[in-house]
Length: 384
Image (tube, rainbow, N blue to C red; front, side, top):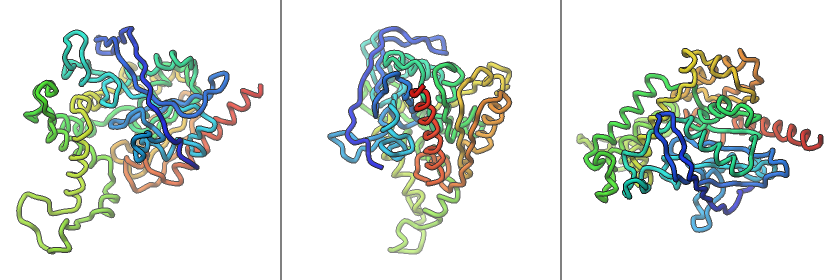
């Protein structure tokens, strides 16, 4: 297995306004994307990768000027990897509202000549899928071999199966959920409040003042990061270890950093505040909260999935308490009720929600086997 090598992001501009679920529209926007592998003659081997909260279009490979800039799913996508770019043409798209190149709150609003800031319209998972479908149209891809994502990306993959049932043959939903629990919505709101109450947020227009609400972003990331880890993983990595145990075995008796876990979370928060946009964080967490495809069907997920036509792989992790296996089983049960072909894997992994980004051998084997099956189907189709 090797790296995809050096990759180059691409930009696609759209002049025609995109109507959003909120009733607002956004026009004159750009989507950043990357592609890996080769599109076959009948364009049947395309795989769309949908990203999670703080990821982007940079799924695999590295940039020429940043040799350590491996994509966020580089362990999953590449030559000989589970999503094998020797066989599949893989597309990563950066969602609208993001801070990694696609049009977002930090970009200029054509109507005002100033950054959108808080005026950037709220988005939903379904809005992102609509934008991705437009990009697929431009690339001439009528039907994806698979649409795949983890966490928030899994919500997008599930939405693809509902919104465009004829445009994907396989739907791969990893560490995801059909809707957020009240607890998850609560965590998201605490994180948003940390940003909204930071004096440097300036009502979302902090760009004009040359400031960044770093403290709010730091706390938001710390809150979020706790939910991505399992209790067992945190206990094994940090336990109650003191940061300066080599110097003293006593507490500092102040409000600074005593424990290793405190140091780790503050490091994660500091790092996040250096590269992520506060308005983007607000937009994406709200889109997470709004996702609920069953809502239009009286809360009946089976009815919401009745029009799907894809085959499905659904995977969960035993220690993921943010999007627990029970939530993945809800998706599976609704699909089975609709007589869809479903493969379900519940993987015993200690890493909590973040497990979908890591290289657990059982997890990788499940995905590899599923994509082997997709490849066999393509070979049969091409032979016919």
